[in-house]
Image 1 (spheres, rainbow, N blue to C red):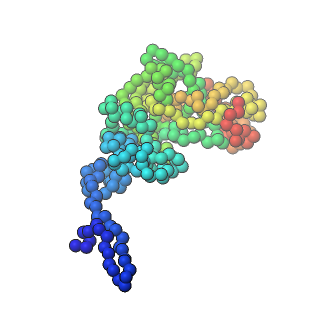
Image 2: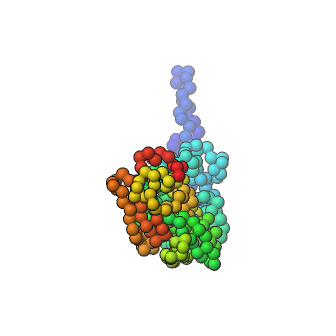
Image 3: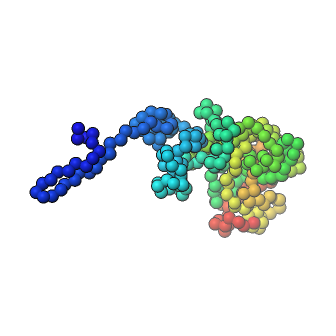
Length: 310
């Protein structure tokens, strides 16, 4: 009888009143995700087995708080003040939702009936697309021409031999008029997995003079390529290294790179000629790709720490 009461027990002894702690006995409701009683959303086995995009869609569909995963209030009214802190994230969302695309994009997909299932989530490995490029090394950035849907656009691409597929930014795809079916993509990098809303598309990529052309039949259009903003300090490197002096290189910042060419186009990674300096461990290398000359390798010590040099 006593343990079924929610009232305060009172006992008088020698003129003093002693009160016990008030206990409210409540029964946990059903989980909003699996409708099973006895556990909360953040420990629900079904919820934990989902990728981050599916989790976010479930939270939006069930009207749960994005901050605490509770029901009955919005994120702006949530009393939970803890930051995500996953991978250093300073946002006020639940850790289990970290890495999801922007919520406005997820909601838009759901309104259009594009919610992915577990079966059609594709996982691909990428080398550089989801992490900033090392400040101590230069990767192969080349000028390219993209053709698709009757249009052609000039841009810059990065040759990434660590990626299974080629990626195109949504901005470049819109400029070129590329279209394709929606796709839920799980990008796997050395730092973990990230879910993105993508779509498959077909286009042609070539050198600016059109001498080298490659068909991309299954390229993936993603919201953006997060490669940083560093500029290749071409003029300073040509002055410092004699083996680079007479070669014409593109000077492009990484934020202008709108395409990542992966190993689904293996011949695009063929080096036709190589210019090597006296020490390959401490100086960059000039390489002739199908798209023209570019520089790869280590940045000279005098240039480290400067992200905007030309």
